[in-house]
Amino acid sequence: MKSILISTIIILCLVSFAETITATSVHDGDTFRSGKQSYRLWGIDTPELDQRWGVAAREALRQLLYGREIEIEQHGTSYRRIVVRCEVGKQDVSLELLKMGLAWYWPYFAPDRDDYREAEADARKARRGLWSDTKPVPPWEWREMKVKK
Image (cartoon, rainbow, N blue to C red; front, side, top):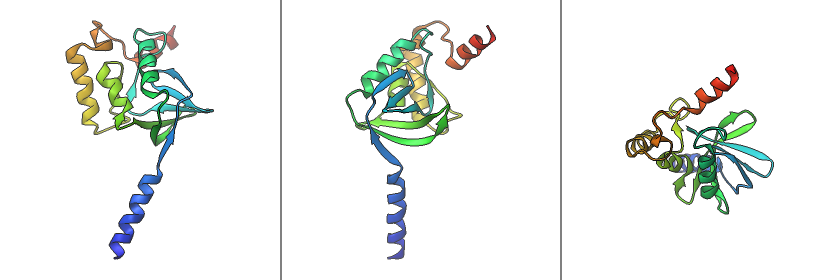
């Protein structure tokens, strides 16, 4: 009986971390807003808007999120944005962007996500999205180049 009670409490605690929101705007391929709050997708990085594939990544995120309930799971903060893993229906939004070839997997922030690693590898092999370019520039390198100018 005691173990059932403890298990129930643990499950309720885990469930309480999930929240359902709707997107009111999409800034770029990995950042969106719900009301006044900004959210950053967990585990991936997408091209910047002034970078090749940046607008395509933003539009893909808009298509995935708009008009739908988004279930979020918080994973910290970054530059006043809440970092979240998002699901729409049963689709992991970050995973979908990786499958489309519109994002890089960031294992440092989302370790042990073999599905993310495999989705990026499959997109690279199929030359989908940004992987159709000869030498796609990761957004962290793009941002660093802009700072040096």
